[in-house]
Image 1 (cartoon, rainbow, N blue to C red):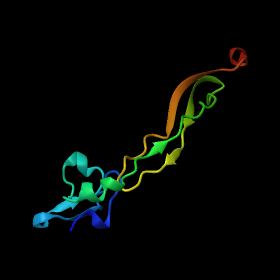
Image 2 (image 1 turned 45 degrees about the horizontal axis):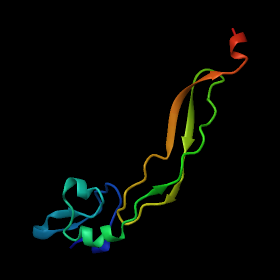
Image 3 (image 1 turned 30 degrees about the vertical axis):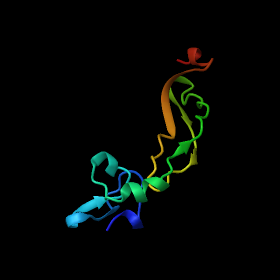
Length: 109
């Protein structure tokens, strides 16, 4: 057995092979953290690994509330998707609180 037939990104419990002594070994990139990679993982999977690359953050959106507490959001795009067990993509969206201060807010009752 071994990883020659598959390499998976992230944590994927279905990405395994029979290792020595019929024990399960894994071919997902998470196996490096847990220490249960197949013996050929580095040779087969890591040489071809391509980590995720993302572009810059976009502008923050307008506050979702004209008056009072709301939220703003921004996002970014994946420019190079991860392949062959490369590092997964970081968050592509962010949200933060805001306070709507439209000129009509003070006149509303």
